[in-house]
Each structure stands twice: as structure tokens, then as C-alpha cells.
Image (tube, rainbow over all chains, first blue to last red; front, side):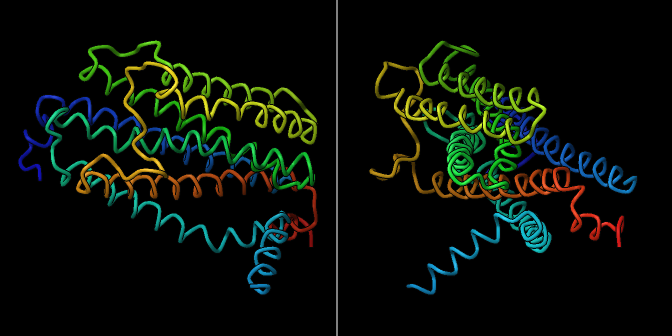
Length: 50
Length: 253
């Protein structure tokens, strides 16, 4: 198990590579959910107008 | 046996109906959200903090807990789309066309994620961000096919015609999947052989394999969640003039 901030963040020196992948992954997930919710709101608004 | 078969048949027929799908998905959505976030969280936490460091690659191998599931998912979503395309062409099931449109951006996202994370992994491991290796190039082609599917659907105004065009392209495009899968065997590549195979036991240590397996399950569940969200939107948009939608949202009594 990894302990301590330096060990967790830097790991063996390749930590930034690992964490940047995790950040990109989270960004993609959030973007997918955000677009779906935004589209839902848009559809619901148009349904109210009908 | 007959009862189970009848149940499966009835379930498929019911899921093919947009109002029934919308009703059913409302019930399952909160549970799917909780379970997918939980499993994905456990898998990633285990992989990032608890899994042992690889003796050869060091800690950079932890990228594989994101890269491998996203690559598997990118290909699986395309196979799923080809099946939807086949159903759409043969049975003209309305929901299969909607599924095609809803799954394409998710598949493109995960394929892009596999390419980007693979590239980031390649820098410290191979010493380069990108090589025109057979596995990498065929995955890039898969991403372009996804982009073409999304573009094609948006350029055709008639939704039925758009669904049919995308169905044909997804059925034809499926040829790229065995090429990606076998690229590491057919050509001499920098890319390592497949991590998951049905025919042989994993080459990884169980301490690394178990969290990876959990991540793969988590990714599949997250795909199910995103697909349900997108599909519900697609159903609402295409059926907005139908009575069941108007009744549901109070526009028509």
C-alpha cells in the first residue's frame, strides 16, 4: 500500500502520469453525465412549451 | 426452462417499447447510479492505492486500471452497436435505432480515453507518446468510425433513415474489431499482448488482476448508466408528440 502524500502523488516518479490519466477519466465521465443532464433539461423545457 | 425463455422474450418485447422502457428505466436508474459509482470507486481505489507496484514497470502500470477497461469498453460498445444495427435492419425495432444514437458518443469517449491514457502510459514506458503501431492505429481508426457514425446521424434529418444508415455503417465497421483484437498477433507491435483472454489464465498476479476485473465491471456498469441516461433523452425527444409523454409531463390531460 502507498503511504504519505509524496509517495501517493509522486509514486516512483511517474505519479503525475498516473494522476493525469485519472483526471482525464473523471473529466470524460463528468462531461458525459453533464451533457446528458443538459439535454434532458432542454427537452423538458421544449415539452413544457408544447 | 420454457418459463425462463418466455420471461426473457417478454422482457425484450417490453424493452422494445419506448413508454415501457422509460417507465422501467426510472426505477432502475438510482440503483444503477449507486452500484456503478460504488464498484468503479472500489476498483480504482484498490488499483491506485492497494495493488502492489509492478517490478518491471513500477507505478506507471497503474494507468492500466483505466486504460484496459476503457479499451475493452470502446470495442464492446461497437459490438453492441453492430447488434443494435442488425436488429434495426431486420426487425425495425424503434428502440434499437435510439440505442445506436445513444451509444455512439459513449463509445467514442471511451475509445478516446483508451488512446489518451495509452499515450500517457507510452511516454515513460516506450519513451514516446505515439507510434504507428498496428494496435494503436487500428484503435485510432475505431475512434474515426465512431466519429463518422455520430456525424452521419446528425447530417440526416429523417431519424428513421439516419438510424438505417448508421446501422449499415456499424455492421460494416465491425470488421475493425477482430483487427484490433488480433493486431498484436498478426503484426510485430510494441503493444503488449491482450490482458484478458477467454482461452488462457491471466499473466498478471491476482493482486493486480482482481482490482482490474472490478474496474472492468465498474466501467461496464457506468456504460449502462450513461446509455440509460442518453436513451431516456432520445426516447423523450422522438416521442414528444405522443400522448404518453404529454400525459407524463402534464402537457395534455
